[in-house]
Image (cartoon, rainbow, N blue to C red):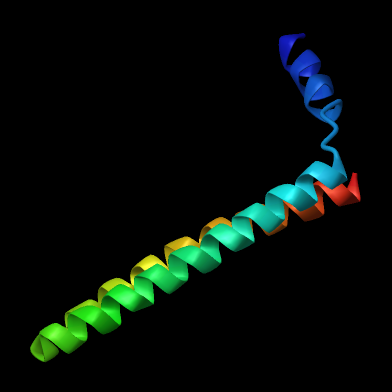
Amino acid sequence: MSTLVLAQAAEAVDLNPGLAAIGYGASAIGAAIGVGLIWAAVINGAARQPEARGMLMTIGWTTFVLAELVMLIGLVVFFIASAG
């Protein structure tokens, strides 16, 4: 009985599409700032120590993917909110 009530409560959640758009915009801006800082640090580090370029690029791409993942999660939430 309790799982049925929980399933019905989950369907009752209504996300405001306007707030979802603001959230997506904030996540996109945050990701853009993060990516800029990541690559600025990689370029700075490679300029200071060229032999560490390979390791810095690996770390740069890994953190780039993590920053973009935040933006993609915001995009998915936006589409879920606007579809409902």
